[in-house]
Length: 227
Image 1 (tube, rainbow, N blue to C red):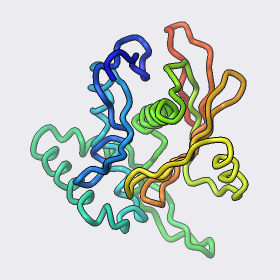
Image 2: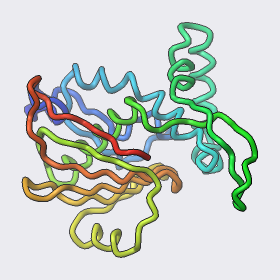
Image 3: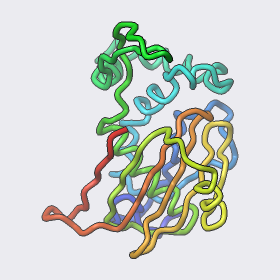
């Protein structure tokens, strides 16, 4: 990919191949059809700092923990990374604790069953991951170069089948190993791109990506809607 411009910053040469989603989310041996995109050393190194936290978060939901891929090794890798972190700086453990909040437990009949801790997916780490995922899959599917964008996202939205049929008709769909299945439509100046990315068959991101004006710092804002 040498000679391509980094798709994340649009400023430097993409001298490395960035795996999106990151390799940390996949069991070994890695699948042959992983998505790789051109990235500069600066952007690649910066994104790698979030890889373990994203993996630890996505494999730790109640539904994902029952997935064969998670049971087959990813849960153990999560546990080892947290143990190593606790023995050293504790950074990975603190990051997970920082994105937890107390929630009320309500039964199906509407009865309050007390309180418990849960992961708050509305956080800066996932904002960065969503933007990285959207840029990478747009480049991989449509060779979309860097653009100043806005990335709005929600999780596990109950949508009618017609929405997915539209993605199949106008976009591209793909599966990467047993970890990710996605569909993405192209981006244009007048129309947004829609990306539906399903991890482990239970955690789906719905991402709306559109062109945005640059702000005073030269970068477009990234915003996430309430989940």
